[in-house]
Length: 173
Image (cartoon, rainbow, N blue to C red; front, side, top):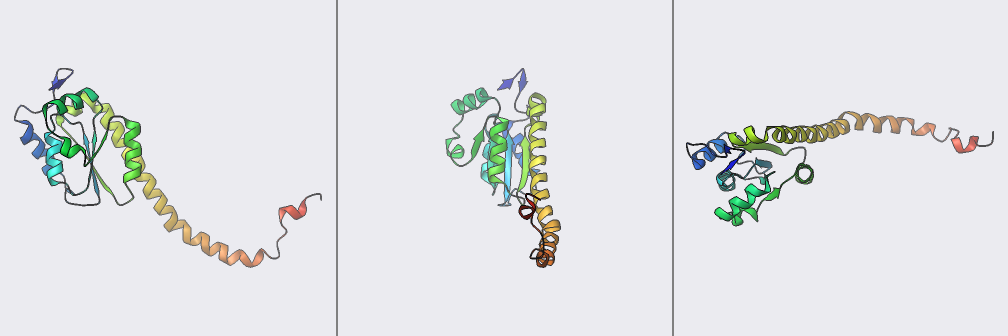
């Protein structure tokens, strides 16, 4: 299977290549992980993740023809009914926002060939994940760092509200 003249799997063997990718994942047994697989290839990477991963799996395949061809060749339906499959960045962003929280560990995995063919999209996905994780971190940081002082400030100043002139009282002056 190839895209733009680039074979999607290593000449050393698709299954061996897939196992090599998965072996590098540190949080493979963490249930609060999301494993984003960029590209289905012939399904070997997806199959190995399905065997080993304890967290959620999202398959992002931007080329629907590759997915269609693979599904005609390889039996993956038992896996596809257990994972999330998206084919565009908009759906991927929504999926990540809906399925991840600030503690979710996200791993992005892909075959080397996908980097050669889809480098720009992989970088866009990485940017979206970075933005999303930054938003979660910023939200938590704001609550932790600013929430308590804001509550303290409000409680300290509430006694002044009974003496204050409200803007509505100044109408017509």
